[in-house]
Image 1: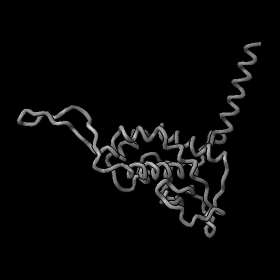
Image 2: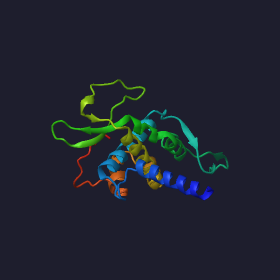
Image 3: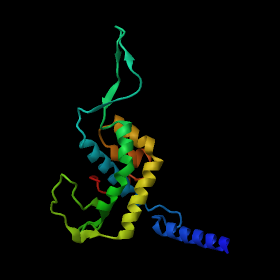
Length: 189
């Protein structure tokens, strides 16, 4: 009887995982993945900008100067691997503030932030063009975590060394999640 319960529990777990998965029959929804990739970059970029640019962190070993004194190697904390890895722990929870947006004129679909951040004021957001779906919110977070896991090194490298067009470089060039040739996604994500 115990093995029947285990098999039943495993089957139930499998069904639950499939229900939460944003993939249908093993296919990735390119609109979803591209939108989440761009949203992830926007969230990381915003979080990095919240850190005092003068704050530094010591990395690696101490350098020995020509006079024999030791000097620590310091880099800006905001774009350090340490800070980025800390952000990775919670950044995907921000996907709860995104939803599918359908442009009323072009009918193009994008994933946009609908909720203001702590220091932002709520502008003129047209909520009637957002498609709010609790299941979609779970999918956004799942996809975000998948992208972080698969492209962790690339994300760290891009944020540590690049300043411009990180979303294009990560989402189109490095990962090929977004197709630049046919892309019609929101560039501010």
